[in-house]
Length: 496
Image 1 (cartoon, rainbow, N blue to C red):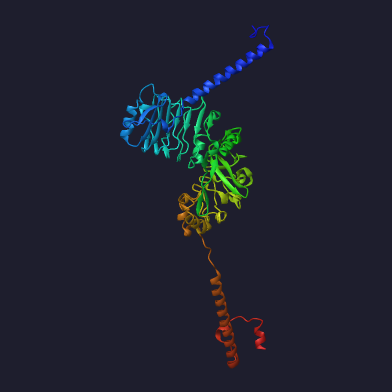
Image 2 (cartoon, one colour):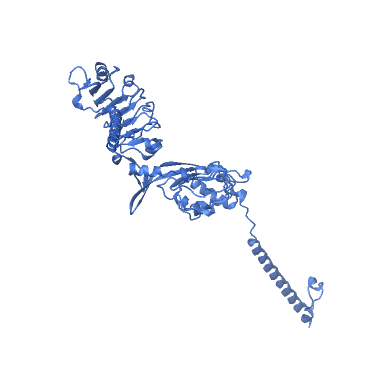
């Protein structure tokens, strides 16, 4: 059956179409008004004027109570009682100039409310967990310092949360937004670290259900960067954070026929250049225990943390030659089959790393010259692990590596766990030079003695011949020893 009569004119069709559009607009406005009503605005002009109760009904709003100038526990309890806050008919509660240190979220007085607002006040902490049907919560402009991490997690109906213009350093956890739109305002909290926003907001799914108020006034503190003897921090705009979130690390995460690494966004970082400050999200890649035989062929952009421990990797060449490894600062390769690190000579990684873990590999020799000047930068904290490698201990090890490990023990955190490959030699730092340094005898001194002896024998021989010659010339005969010796051809010369 047709929805429209056959005889309907074009004007009638246009009229019906316009009516349908108007009906949709009315329905939409009703929905919007219904959502907005949960955060019904009131002002300090609605504060009660009586002397005996600091809470009272708002003007022309029978379901709304306004409490003002609550500065003692007595005023708090007495005002809520005389204001009738616990009556089921009261749906909206507003505080102005609330100056107690803490606000108790777990109070049963809020469970029937739809709106709770505490603004223009001076209090430090929200403690406890909200329960009930709250749809709108406003804690803006209070100099608020901290909120219990799960204060809002048990509010499935929460649609709007305003935490703007405070001094928060950590955001609380938020309720699920899977089946609803959620409006959040965290603007003008300039001490919020970007890592906290990453963990608590950018991970919310579906992200399209989140609406952030005052985006242009929302920023976070980027991770501190050490510049010489001082630390420097910068504010990262919210727009930059959202841009980084769109580029998901997972799509570039290393994978292969038999393995799939896991990747996650770590936080924000920045670089300074002539063009200004460039923000970027850093990535952590976890390939530990994935049966890898080589380093991943490529890493997501801005990867600074790579864990390939407990695999069968034997070469670190890609760490030097692959541009996707250029930002790497933390490298964990414990318990692999790496037997040589000489390929790292002159690499940028050796001067940029923070953590370099190579314990439990097959390294037999540690070329200390690779780390020349690496640990000279006292502003950066660097750590290396080398324990559990079968070090070939010889005289050079005792003379060089032993001293190097001891001198760099601030950085080689497992220096005491570096053992020789021969069990009887024990730890390298206790290596006995007498056991590994075998000196060959120097025969130079004996040669001098032999030469001296030969010279002495020659002198004696000349002396004996001279004596025999003198005796022969004076007495005409040779001495007894000489006369008994067999004649030599040269003797005929003397007899003639």
